[in-house]
Image (cartoon, rainbow, N blue to C red):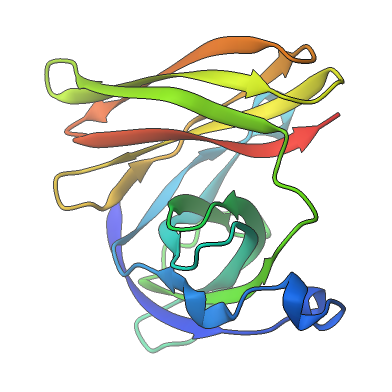
Length: 214
């Protein structure tokens, strides 16, 4: 793992241009932290697995309104030159909360020359309604030097859902360490317990909902 020097920019991309001002947040409300971490590790599962460089980075929604926040960026070398492009990712970020993004190299390859990253806030879209899947009763505890997080996944929709449940673990300095996930099939109006175990040295952890398919 490597700490990452970030250059953060705001960019109102095409997704925002097609919406009215009332349907997107001012991008200044999205605050990307400087405590990012670059990793090169296995991404994906089974036949889709590959070794890729990616960046774990936190973004906070400083407004009181929830939005789907989109981050993107580039991997850069010691001279500031681009050595890889990071695939955009969108996450639901409630007002006043933060989420950990995993921005993966678009070619899903290792970038040993990368020493820093340029992170771009591309948009913060306000949906007609918040996601119908949510996390409640989150509990975090220490297990001999690593964090364990437990919670309930709730599907408020009237349909069966395939829900990506994501955990994020941070070290004592607040820097992201890992971001594991599970794909969970959950019936309508159902509640299911979820648990994740963090790496040794993790001091805090959380669980949140990623992609949802009904």
